[in-house]
Structures are given as C-alpha cells and as structure tokens.
Image (cartoon, rainbow, N blue to C red; front, top):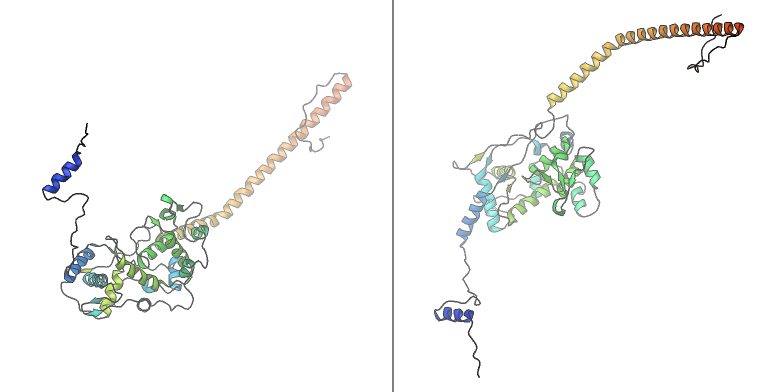
Length: 364
C-alpha cells in the first residue's frame, strides 16, 4: 500500500499566491531608494529647523551682595550677564539650515559667511585670553578629581544628600542647591551648556558649576563653540536651537542685510532672583536694618535690666538673712528644750537629720 503525502495548507496557499502572480513572504521586495534633490533636502531641513525650540541665553541684574555676581566679575563674565537686544529669528534659522545642509562650520547666510570660532566668541564676549590650562578640560582628561562632597559644599545647602540615582544614573537635585548654586545653574544651562531641563543636573554640568564657583579658569568659549557644533550634528529631531542671541548678534555685526519680513524676538526677562530662591537686595537690607534696630533696643534696655537684676539680688539677699536668723532662733529653742528635759529627767524626742550642716552658731 502506497502512502500519499498530504499537501499542507501553507504550501497550497503559497502556490496559489504564486499562481496569481503575488510575491511570497520569503522573497524580499527591492524598492528603489528615494533620492531627494538638493532643493527638496534643503526644504525638508528648513521645515525641521523651524519647528525646533529656541533656548535663549539668560541675563542677570547686578547684585554686588551675591558671591555669584562677584565671582563672575572676577572671571570677566560681564558681557555674558548683561541684557542684549532683540533676536532676528530668520537669520538664526538660516544659519542653522545652511550649517546642517552643507555639514560645515562655515555656514553662509544671505551670501555672507558666518564663522563662529572660539576666538570670535572670546572677542565678542570680551573674555580673557587663555593664560593657563582649562580646569574643566583637565578634569575631563582625568588630571584631577572632584569628590561629591566638594561639589556639595560649593553648590548645595548643608545637612542633606543632594544626589539621587534613578536608573543607575547619578544626578544633582535642584531643590538641594543653595541660592548661589541656583544662580550658577541658570548661568551655565543658559549661557554655556544650553538646556531647558532644570529639574536635575548631570554630573559633568555640576563639575563645571563647581569649578566656576571656585573661581577657576574655564575656557567657556571653546565649550560654547562645541555646543554649536553638536546642536547641528545631533540626529535627535527635537534638539533645540542654542545661542540664538550670539548667532543673531554676530550676523548683524557682519552687516548681513535684514528684511522687513524678518521676525524679531524680544529679550527674555532677567533671572528672577526671588523666584529661584535668592532674596532680593531690598529684603536683605530691610532684614539687616530690623536686626540692627532690635540690637539697638536691646542695648538701650541693658541699664534698666541691670537695675532690675540688682534689685532682685538685694531682695534675695534679705530673704536669705531672714531665713538664717530664723534658723538660729530655732536652733536656740531646741538647745534650751534639751537642757530643760535633761534637768527634769524627761527624755527628749529624736530630731530629724539636719538639711544644712553649715549653720552658724546659735545665738546665746
């Protein structure tokens, strides 16, 4: 008896599809890749750039009473802190579009090249020339280390753990920052390493903040140029547009012509000291005046308090004298009673133990 192999449903269905001229699942389909013309590619990049978020630089009002402000003045960061003019948004977009389209560090905006190098940034912000090695670069090269305790002492409030480790990544918590640490956070994340995320701080940003708070030299012009490059090369579609003030001001300095249709964006408000946990100078002065007034009132009340204390001491002394005289009289009566009982042969009851052994002799 000969056994016949039964055809499976899969093979039957496959043969039926092949008979109808359909491609099987095992056979790959080769589609021609979509090639965009340069004009279409530039238009696609332009649409993506115009949808991206702008992260503006931050400026600060003068506060000579803050260590943050005094350290920035010593590091010659004055132009990074001051208020700037409006932003030509169209020039900024054209800069990023051409930089990404041609993948170059020398983009062309309206037929004019716009180079932004560390030296140009240094000259624009009047930053000091590098006379010593950059402390931040030395840290990245593992030439020295900064412990977590050192960073916490420079930036955070005392008495709490400022670090958290979600998903095996260490971050510095924003609520643990001191008022000076919060100023450094807004300065670094707005003017050096732009980032709109302010809830937690990456360790490398915390190190940069600590080095600046310590007054050490950091080549921030090279850091700014590096972030300009990475903002154009990052494949993440929602990456922000950084340093719009710098790009717009440098384009205007090169006398790139503006158009009537260009959109101008106003400067952001300065960093609100009180909102980020730093008391206003007026409140600090008022609090100091209140403390001085209280101290003056206390100083004025000192003579009267001394008189009251002297009077109270006199009363206590008089009470002690009265008490001592009373004790002498009681002791005399006890001795007289003991003598009479002994003379008449009457037993004298035992006395409780004396509470004070240093009594003066009884009066005769």
